[in-house]
Image: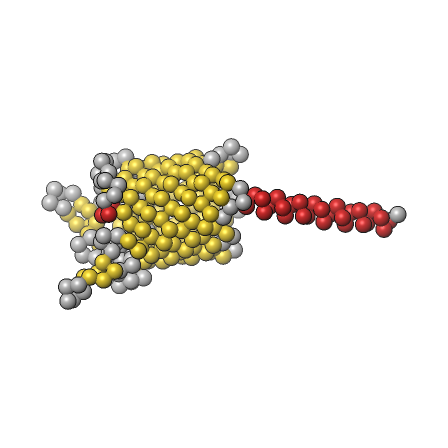
Length: 265
C-alpha cells in the first residue's frame, strides 16, 4: 500500500512538473504588451540633456508601447519636451533572454516643435546595443551608431571616415532593505563619438546657450556619473515607477538633478 501511494505521488509530481514546463514554454511563445508614460524633469541620455542647452530643468512627457512575442519585442517610444523645442520618436526591435538584451533602434528627432520630414536622413540615426546583467545587480552596456549624417571624422587629407560613435556604461543596483533601490552608473565614450559626444556649452548668436558640436571632444571621455534612488510601486493593475537622481557630466562640467515618475500597464 505504501509503495502504491509513493508511486502515485511520484507520478503526480512528474505530471505537474511536465504541465508547469509546458505552461512556461507556452507563456514564452505568447504575445505580450506593455504601455505607459513618464513625466521627467529633464530628458537625460548618456549624461547629456537632450535639449542641448545644459539647463538642469527642461520637463518632458515620455510615453511608449511595447509589443512582444516570446523573447522578441518591438518598442515604440516618444518624448515631448514642454519648455524646449526638442521632440523624439524611437522605434526599437530587440531580443531579451535572462540577463541578455540586444536591440537595434532608429531615432527620429528634431529641435523644433514641427518635426522635419520623416524621410529626411539628417533626422535619423541607427544604433545597436547589447546589455548583460549579472546576478540582477551589475549591468554592462555597449552601444554603437551605424548610420547618422554627422557620424564622421574629418581626416588630415580632407576625407572622412565613419566614426561608429560608441558608448560604454557600467551600472550597479543595490537594494536598500524593502524601501528602494540605489543605482550607481558610470558611462563614457571609448573613442571619439561625433554623433553624440559634445563639448561644453557655448553662447549662440541670439544670446542663448547650447552644447558645442563644432568642437567634438576626441578620444576617451567620461560623460555620465550618476546616482539614482528608485522604487516601483506595484498596484496589480499597473506599476508606478518613481526615481530621483543626480548626474554629473565631466566632459561638459554640467550637473543635473532628475525627478521621474510614471504609470505603466
